Image (tube, rainbow, N blue to C red; front, top):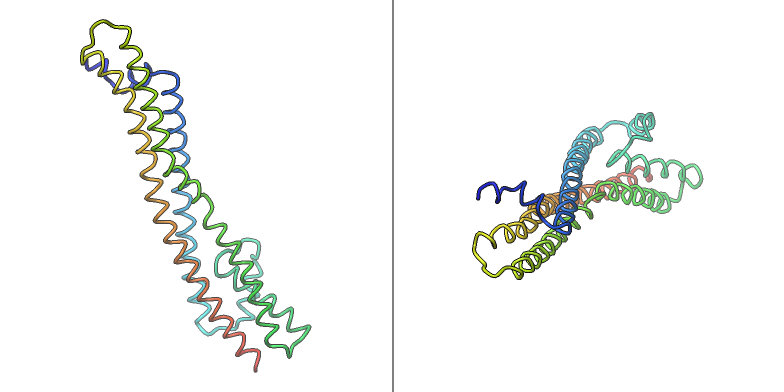
Length: 224
């Protein structure tokens, strides 16, 4: 009995549809874990970059020197350094064209920073929609496999004259495996999605606050 109800035997003896459902769920789970580790790494780095940049930015150093230093590795910039460099670069360019138009200088810098912010948020939110999809659809995919397996089990029992628990048990266990696997795929994806969305929102608020403070700083610099 124990050998008949082992997990490996239940999977190998399951119907083709149930096996296909299990394969889909396993593939989705592997991809979701890869996305979970990737987003965790990206968000940790984003926070570390923001901490280091803000510490240097508010230390009272020369903004022109900071701008030049960041330009040495411009193609690899992300987060606050990228937002700052985009805004200050546009500010410097417009100041050469119309140095007395303070309002135009600030608006141009803010537009440039908004573009950089949009790109940064797209980068941070990458794969989050996939985690949401896995978390919301995996239980239903598993449920479909359970329903199909149950139908398959009852069809097999219909051809027997006498039905016992020993005959029903393997078929029902086979059917319920897909529900369990669906939940195992969905739960980590949902937990990670909720956690990462919260972290992305906090980073977005942090970027917005920096942009506002930097705009005020540019306004003061434009009057001098």
